[in-house]
Length: 265
Length: 246
Image (cartoon, rainbow over all chains, first blue to last red; front, side):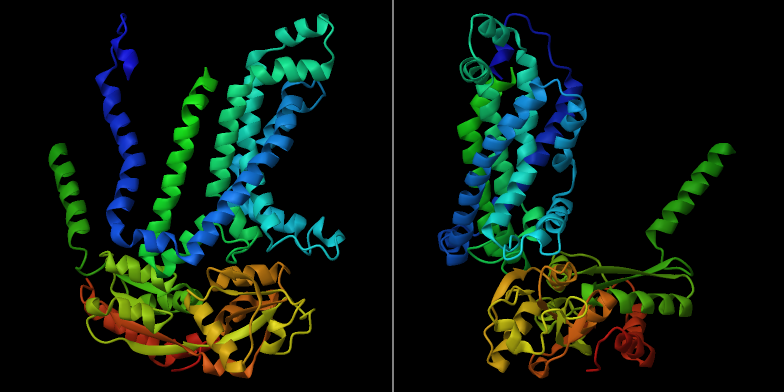
């Protein structure tokens, strides 16, 4: 908003304000509706119920672990996709987008038929059960969240170009040193925003989790699953937990958004 | 002249939208529990055949979701719930007290051929048997708990699913050795699962009530639809789907 006070004012077409206002209302009003529906006096009791505490703890733990895995696996993948000259890398770039486009439920089914008991890989792992475990929750979250990091980071890497890296290399820096001292600092803002988006997506993950990991308190029932279950029976409880998710989401945005914005430039 | 035709056509269209209760084009809206999908779809055809010009619109969903929609002023003529609790939630909206038109009970389902050799409810509490049930908060889960209590068995579920269909999905995929679902659901799954009945199921029978809404736009048709469901044809269709008579 502050940029409006600058010297050159192109002026905003009035026509844009109407759809913009509708768009904003579409984002904000449902949350207002949620707050209006909630019974604030009983909120503390509902949020501190054993089921809710277990779900929140599980959600935060799994989403944090998923974000770390996104960084450790997705980060290198982004570098490879952006810098490698291997034939077919462009196809791979498109493939990485798949979880972004697929409905999460489909992702969950796909994971089930890969890692489940009768699955492609799962049937070769006797004695190892992946579905119904917290590990399954994390796998589902990484599956849906990693593209956010990879796509953002890969775009930033390609925008940044290889000039500085080339210079560093001509000055005698080894590949690992170039990567550590030049490449990583260049894309740090994009990495930050990618991590935040991945964390947020992992925290909100629902479809793949309920399909692949199931729903059991303290083991696989994350906050979104708990909300869904309560919506069947205890609407006030579901509303209270939804508010909790909104608060966590707002906190994530508040912490990360300024940095993420800088990363876009 | 051209203008007149357009106006007349528009007026006709508007009239059609507005009343819709003359001769043809009547719509009867039925809210029904998801487990009634097969049987009510068959009854829809029969009702429409017997009432030319009437279009039956079926809205299938979980009973609690339907009750919630009705409480939020959804327009419907008939409500058929999978349990009495959800019917009671909308008691104030009913034209007359609900009547039970069918019952449903639980059965164990296993992947085809029953690879884990499940013979009764006690097997579902054993170590090494991957069991999937409904969460106790939803009707099928409440019934599962009741049956297990009656059998003196403590279930050790690997997962507590949101609804019966989710339990079926896990069993069909071979990701569970056993699940607890309704007989009607097991029947609908056909060869995808093997059903294993157990005596304690009789301790947790689910009643399916049906009622006409007070605000029903088509009250007379609604009454006739309820009569069809409760009559011989309706009961035969329900029996085919695995339901028992009340």
